[in-house]
Image (cartoon, rainbow, N blue to C red; front, side, top):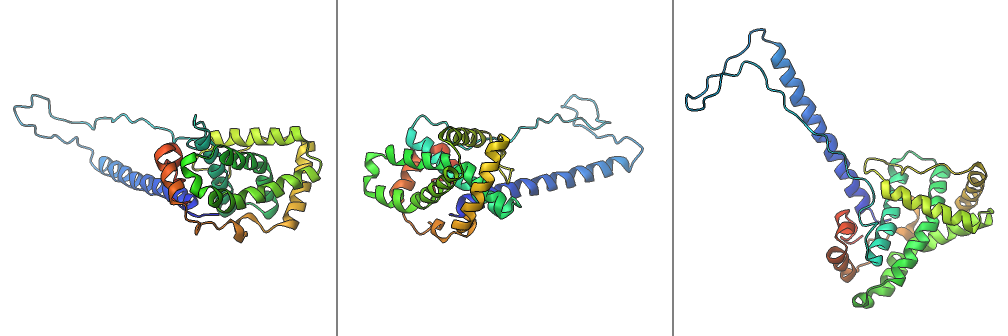
Length: 254
């Protein structure tokens, strides 16, 4: 997996944490100063201002703005942009969960299996909607940049079908993964997925065991290291035509 999107995601989380700590320190200092004197303080005001001296601290109204949720660009009307958002959002979600989610190898495998049908579809959609102006980089991207993730996801789908997961189950897994991407919060190390019925859960666990035995864990798979695959035309196209996707760090040379 390329580390840029993962790194950028956690750099933003860390920045918010430092900001919150700084605000708490300032608030604590203000409260301490206010409590240290029992006599109200009178502040002199220039005569041309025309307001009474301040004897109390004015309350400042604040509005908490919730962090944006959902993978940027997932609902784009351009099918290439939407497919790239689904692909990159999935890779990022799996990479973050594997690095920071505290999951066991089996739990990460189940998460990857749940993502696999949607990832296969996203990769196919990228190839099907490939822009004509990017034709010189088509094979490089489809085979060497997106391809390693798509081929691994296809192995996961094969493990699912081998464990008895039906086509209807695969479609349901794809739909639930896409829904989770659309509501994913940046601060969540592990993407929030709905529960599945016990029968499907049992088949997922069986498939995960077979998948783990057949492949290297997601975060350790050397075939997923694609940083060296240079695709400047595609990167520039994503930045220019898919701004929501690029805003999440996806367009800058994954």
